[in-house]
Image (tube, rainbow, N blue to C red; front, side, top):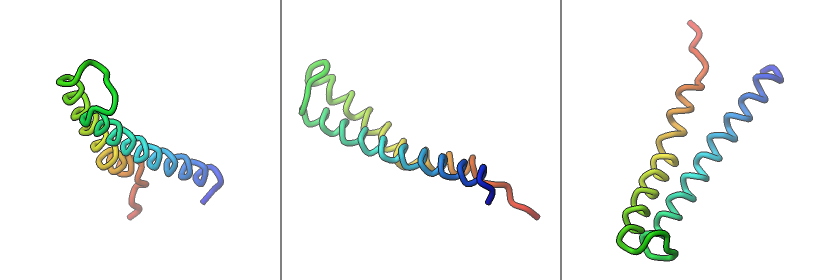
Length: 78
């Protein structure tokens, strides 16, 4: 690999791992909201907000890295 390709691969690897970390943090924050660990808008609303944050975090953790990896995949040479 050339130094430019190596740097690009490192940046993409870092981006994928940061996306997974942020997704895990969103899931954790959503569960704290659902449980009532801190208050944003009152209890019935906080549970719905927490559930939405958990779903977004799960999507960000599991699906987005696969989408980005597929998009960044190098083309197959015939």
